[in-house]
Image (cartoon, rainbow, N blue to C red; front, top):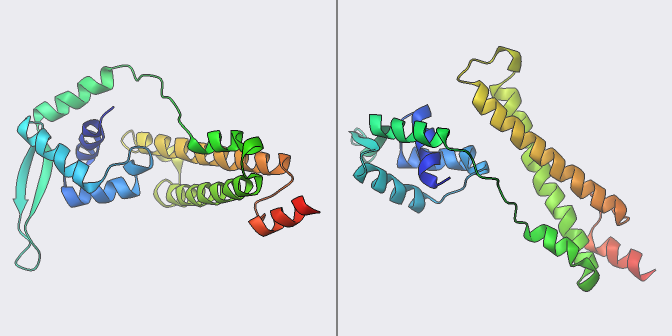
Length: 193
């Protein structure tokens, strides 16, 4: 997958300015495909040159600068359909964190345990965000429209992934005789006694 495909999906859902796309990446798409605003604008320019999007200037009414609103062309929708027909390659997972945990016998155990506590907090916060988002946007999953169902399914994948990460961190902490409230200070005290 490329950033172009993520932008095609986002524009298929709703035409947008580059700024709006950047915000969408910050709030939703970016949770599974990240991009900087410079990357988004660079790909939009290429997509425009390739005839995949059209640009309509929207007046800022003298109060704000004019903005460009991007909309998929027929060719852009065709490219999106072609991409959805291609089998998705198996995704590989790279984790510096997992390698660091594996290095515990050779490194600073207390620092790594503290990192597990920190990672758990980060993923617990993301899980809370996803669960709140599900409650807000999909209060009754049994009544989702065909257009709403894919977004809910992706959100459910994010919830399951974050929940699994938190459970993994809890499992590691329990095996190491620590918990989510462990701090580097308590680790130093417990290893020195």
